[in-house]
Image 1 (tube, rainbow, N blue to C red):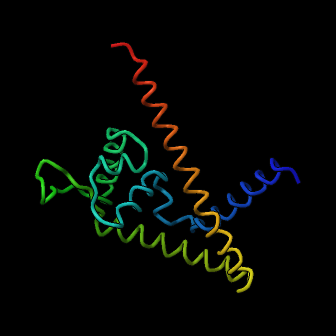
Image 2: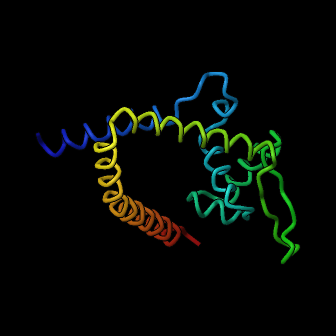
Length: 163
């Protein structure tokens, strides 16, 4: 099989796995949220963060991140609070409702992952997990290079702007 066909097959298989991993019943409230909001909420599971920190983590502007956070605040999924170390800084954190919603999603995804692994059996599941663990550094390298390229492109674009 050619490299192109292999890459297309991998993309199709991974898309199916991700679809199955994320599959939820249609009445699940998290399905009403755009994926960007879900990603921000997942990032907040580790604790409160600044808007700037979230924007940098997701390679977006602070303005776009702030708008997204405002929507989450309106839905009572996150709230803003003063940073106890620096009152000029505002932090964003999950509300109890937001934490419950994202935790429920995580549990459903884990359950779906377990069902997929059970379908393979123990030996094949272990092989799959070992291969995916080997693939992880490659993924990190690809995304790091892509991030550097987008930063270089942004700085080049800024340099070309007339004063």
